[in-house]
Image 1 (cartoon, rainbow, N blue to C red):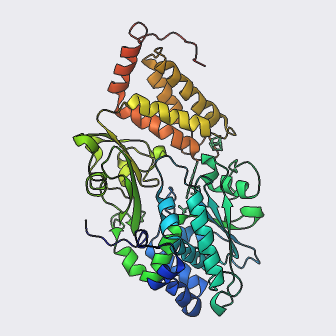
Image 2 (tube, helix red, strand yellow):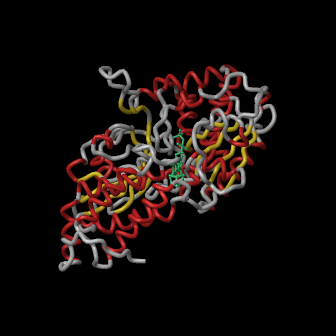
Image 3 (cartoon, helix red, strand yellow):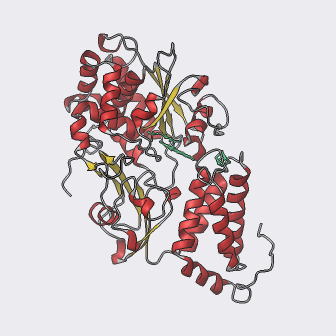
Length: 445
Ligand SMILES: Cc1cc2nc3c(=O)[nH]c(=O)nc-3n(C[C@H](O)[C@H](O)[C@H](O)COP(=O)(O)O)c2cc1C
Ligand code: SF4
């Protein structure tokens, strides 16, 4: 695959995180030009024309989200940059922030200019101390050089960036949970509407965007709309609703591969290319059994589905939740899918904030059923029970406030549908006397 990285351009350079190296590689030139030659609407127009879709998991068109901000608002407008990155298997924002922090800051300034935001908050996962150090140093360097603060580079535009360290829960990454957390409360997601663009941080219009989205904004202004649109999968001309999957993407690869890591490639490479060409193939000469395409929430693909493109629609065709964070977890042929299901349910039961009954009870009881199975008291009908829970919790079935419950449901549904035989064999092997039972059983505590 021949592709020159842009989002990771400085990550492997000596001192690539410093202002000196960033400026030497053309850093902050896009900002200089934008402040001199382009108005905020021109920058927003470039982002719209590029077809950029948010990289935080939902793939929402970035310029469309910005357009929901009220026009001529007297202010303030806030920009929250989501660096919570708590999705299991996901670590690409960390690599960017540690290795290429100024690119993110330039993207934040350009995005704030386009949205007329006067303050930006970087909501940073607490467990990322090196990111904290690198981002704070980069912000200080940017202030010292006049890229941040009052009247940036002599223009009428002013912006302050503050880092807010996260509170250590997965749900802090949900955009309204994140807003609650910055306001000093528990990260309980808010019922929408109102959406943050109308009433967000401190009840003011707010945009929440992912770190990688910010870096893409910078790349679009620096390298142009045509460059961005020349990468990835264009919209299907036969489908007017298809927005395409354009631009570069960071793919994280972890699990049973020879070269786990963070890689940049055009959107739409196949899972097989990601594993073989980027990740160096499955370790120990083994074969793939299953792959999580984009963070645990997205569910699993089988070895037969590896040729699907990792764009915004490919994983949907495999019955997954979507491309999510494009961070793959590769499981080799020896790995137990029961263990996968058990670990997944354990995670979501622990992370549910408890506000919505279907999520609180559904994630908890799934965990209890799996614990009982692990203790040798599983029944075949438990798989139907789990699948029923999976089908009934989340925003998609319309029963919860936020998408954490959908994230809990997809690993359950896809594992049961695609690996039912292996799970049935596990239940029969561990409970030979009672696996056919349909009688009620006590939960393990
Ligand atoms: C439970 C949960 C956790 C999330 N965690 C993150 C996260 O860590 N980082 C992120 O960018 N988006 C996360 N999101 C998605 C955000 O709510 C939001 O859609 C995203 O930050 C928007 O950025 P984008 O438009 O640039 O993609 C999460 C969503 C849910 C439901
Ligand atoms: S879906 Fe779950 S995590 Fe999200 S608000 Fe409801 S209970 Fe909390």
